Length: 106
Image 1: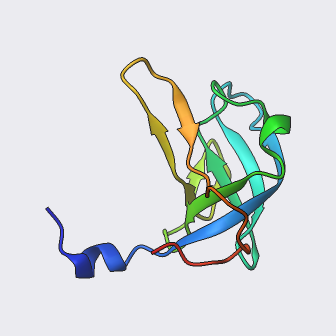
Image 2: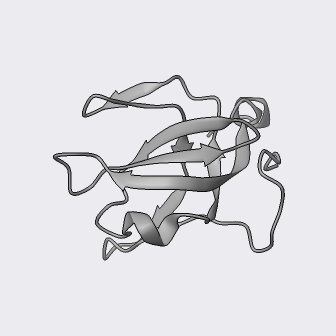
């Protein structure tokens, strides 16, 4: 269990996917340029569930204050939120109505 103070440290924001393409040499990783009030690059392991072209323009929820990480040599400056079930189906978490990029998720 974590405290509400610990959870509040996570900066969740709405982002819009501007561009997406597969990471060369990976069937799982997709690199995206997103707008969260500023442009960021995020790498996510969603390539078996989504084609890059189908996610462009999608609004997503992003953890914006993660320390950058490198996946297969590509820098990721955040993390998108997704859910998966016991059968391995994956779904990107999206807002149910349009809201401005950079809006804080509370």
